[in-house]
Length: 100
Image (cartoon, rainbow, N blue to C red; front, side, top):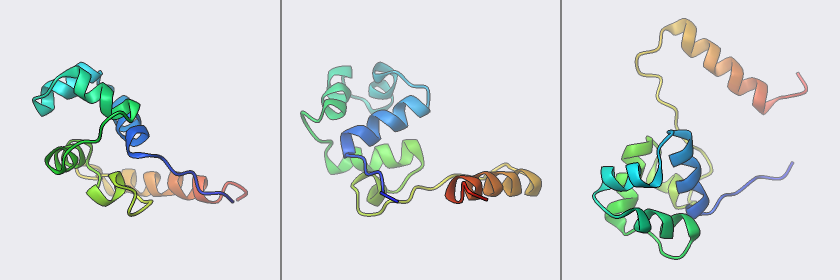
């Protein structure tokens, strides 16, 4: 089974879209221009260390994940009941083992 790897640019875009944010909204949150976010997503420039940390905080992922040092991401279960956490874990297992 091949592992799907995403570039930093692809991860930023994917995380932004999954958070239902426009480039302008993300830029405003980070205090920079929309064209700056666009340049990151197009792979024309890379965020500085400061912005990598801010992106990780904004999207609740690790900086290692953003930079491709690890292929795992985290999901916050804060505020979920034990039953909801169990359901999330079951869904994850279904994706990991689709033949079961």
